Length: 203
Length: 120
Image 1: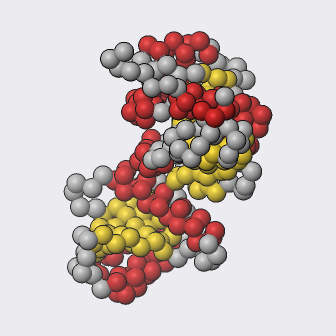
Image 2: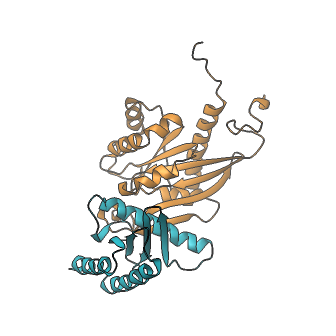
Image 3: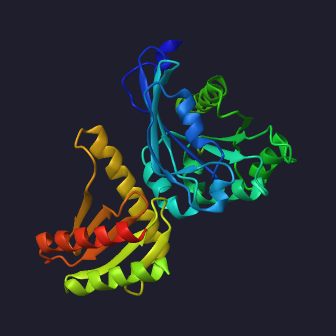
């Protein structure tokens, strides 16, 4: 059985050898991208934090990512290179640089945002091409925010409405097991996609 | 007031050499504090890119044991970009022509950075 999945083919996914994979985390300001990467990385995270001078960013935190974050971890015989992007719109060019060669994307949305679905829409549009070609996952954070009224189903139906069949999960970015669950789910999506039999278009 | 002082430092810097085409002072998180840029250059993009590049330079200098970052130099076939810190709270970005005398530019940029430290 295993034989189908093993081998040197880089496009396949080995269950006996160590795989290497690059994943990128995007999402709105203060959604917990930096926190999440710090929670699961097995190496000291390489980050680029600068003091935040804008009120929007200050609402939740004193510093903000300006270029990227890099963390590394191993799970399910896979070495995961985790890249975080800046959340502020003016740094969007960094996200498109970091997406090169990535196998999957986590879209993190702060559920305590005034209009979280608008934020989701922004990132689905910005990374629409990537998400059409690669697996992605919506990770919703800040569920303990009392002002929150948007539920997981709202995100799910919104994404479907926009033409994206993408899993939606609730996550506490501060908790390593939570973030690892999200990564596992995304890995499964990637493996599914890579080991799926090629469908004959004329068939 | 502070923006005016910064703009006068930049105007002076641009005036020191015909090779300097543009300059800007940016907060470490990428917001424009003052700029003397030619038309057609988007302030927000210059700001965000400078902040991202310099913060990466900081980390790389540190990770690869090159000490504290002094400057980032980018060379393209149409000119140079020099970035440096103006103290902990400002980034100075300068655009220069391809045939610029780099030594002189570095000197002028260093002087301007020192003036910016006093203002910010």
